[in-house]
Image (cartoon, rainbow, N blue to C red):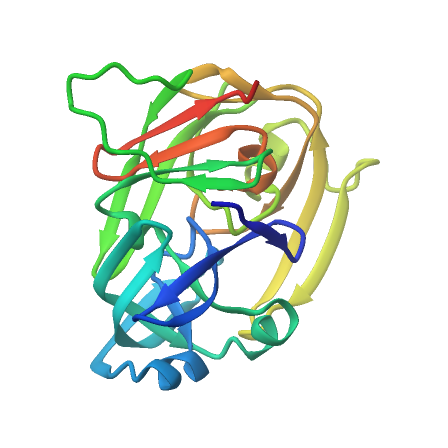
Length: 270
């Protein structure tokens, strides 16, 4: 199955709701909970469960969404019934890109799937038996965090100074994002040439300071040093994690997410 990149880096995938409604969702490994637009929820007759889910943005603000159960949601051959999703106003994304929801890792909690970054494809391989050798070039462990209807996954990076950073796998972000404290750890100064500072306010009213710099030395996966990249553009901000591993790093590989086995595999495309 092919996907389209919208807004620069988001993977928009075709989905089907119920027997006949076709639309597009963004596949976002860092969103936590599935999301559906309020307009689409009304169109498919999804009923609110009466529950809400509260998650936290990377900068710490709590965001609460009312929950619905999508009767049936399909992406290619993979489908699930009674899929939990938060309702959110997605009118802007819908108007501009034809996107009416987000798929999180929760939708794939029972199956492995592969995002072929360079080829812009998504496949759903059969889950191999436990004693089968992996066919991908490198596997790394995931720490899977489940919070009600939310599923997130983390792995570790080795930074150029040898520090270990626990990062959320977040295909919904573009750049590698690191906590602001790593800026000086990596020998950078806020007033140095090549360090750009941006201040602003996000849609929740949170005032942020972001600094952008290029790291010339390699950043690699802690458990797979051969998966390594140089000259990465990095955003530094005060966040609640060590960092987030974004699409700019991930899309150079065919990446398999196996949430049931708490593993992630990287293969270099031919």
